[in-house]
Length: 93
Length: 211
Image 1 (spheres, rainbow over the protein chains, first blue to last red):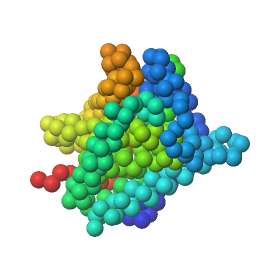
Image 2 (cartoon, rainbow over the protein chains, first blue to last red):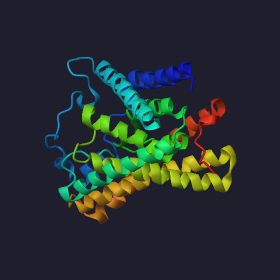
Image 3 (cartoon, each protein chain N blue to C red):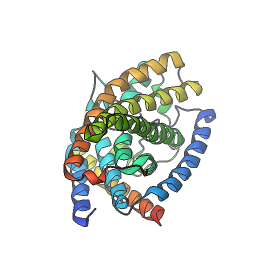
C-alpha cells in the first residue's frame, strides 16, 4: 500500500470514529440484552478489575457527549492503528 | 458480545486466557510466514477501520443493538492468522483503554471473536470461495462466513457463561444465538459492502493462500 492510500483509509476510519460514532444506537448489545432478559446483568456490574483511562468511549472531562465520544473514537482508532502496524512490522522481520 | 468482568468464573476465564495466549503466539508465528510487505500497513488500517466500525452500533430489534465484529473481513484481506492478531489487538485496546470487555474475560473474548470468529470464519469463507470461485465466491463466502462467525462466537460465549454457572445453557444458548442471528445479518451486509469496494479498487489486497 502506498503512503497516500494508507492515509486515505486511516482518514476514513477516523471520520467514522469521530463524526458517526456519536449517532450510533445506544441500546444494549446482544449479550447485554440477553443478560438483562435472563437476569444475570448485575453480575457484570461489579467494579472492573482494572480501571480504564477512557471508560465507555467517553473522553473524561468533556461536557459535550458527542465530542467526548468522537475524541475517544479518534484516540482509539490511532492507538489500534499504531499497535497493529507495529506488531505487523515486528512479525515480518 | 464483549464479556465484562463478573460474568465468567475462574474455571472458565483462566483456561480461556491460557488458550488465547498460546493461540496468539501460534498466530504470530504463522502470520510471520505468510506476511507480505504490503500486508503490514494493511494490518494497521484494518485494526483502525474495525475499531471505528465497532463503535457504530446499529439497531436490530426493539431495545437491542449490534455492531460489526470484523473477524471475517480482516481474515479475507489478511489471512486467518494476521486477521486474528488484528482482532485481538482491537479487543485488548477496547478492554484496557475503554473498559469494553473485562480484563479477566479478555482471554474468552479473544477465544470467541479472534479465534472462533476470525479463524473459524475464515475456514468457512475459504471453502465457499473455492467451491464457487471468482469474485462471486469471495463475496458469497464472506457473506455466509460473516453471518456464521457471529453466531458461532455468540454460541461459544453462551457456553462459557453456562460453564461459569452464570446462566443455564438451555436458556442462554438459544437466547444468544437468536439475537446474534439478527446481528449477523448486519455483519454480512457490512463485510460484503467493504469487500465489494476493495474488489473494485484494490483486488490485489484480497488474501490468497499459497498453493
